[in-house]
Length: 264
Image (cartoon, rainbow, N blue to C red; front, side, top):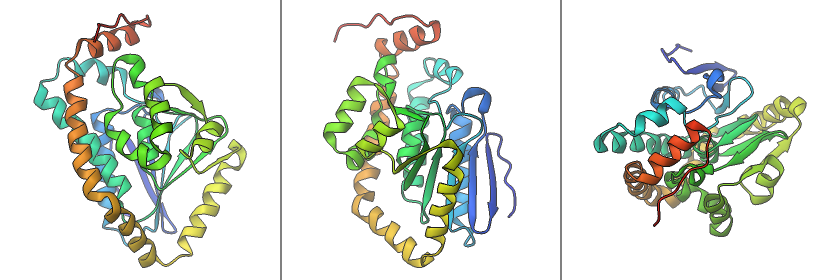
């Protein structure tokens, strides 16, 4: 398969399975503009490759994705409103691309899948996690809002559980995440590859056209709603970046101190 010039994502294909690896292990594969751009470029490329039947999304090293990069967070405060809107929409486009990709996408999770990283896993068709993984949306703890993923999360685990995760910002174990319906399966680290391989072989044995149409059915149920919602939520995301709570929360997080919230 022709290689792509990607600085933060590794891409490979073997026997009909494309592997996308977030490749910022020194940053626990934290999200920034470049990583989002590279993932979108990789997905557009893979969509044109008929030999690819399944995609496996994972992170290099001992993390799936720890959320937003610290340097990226610092830069948000100095962005113009238009830049923040564009940045928010870029992430929302990535979520939609994964959710509506015409072939199955499996998230293979080791270690943390937090904030935007949890959102990234959540929009995949399957999440298989090793037992030491952790999940959560801790945005409220740093003065931010998990806006764009909320529309997907509510459909996956229901409003009651979504409220629990998004309002408390708590971090949960893989076992808890499975009980909530957030992920499909928890396995030992030693058995993770075998579990992924078994799921891949199951999917590859099915009719490619039937898989595609089945995914299109799911997309048709919610595509318009999700597309409209994520655009609205991207604006909320960008708007919130201009608040004092966001500025204080990011500063406190970077300085490892307790934030001093403003009054509502």
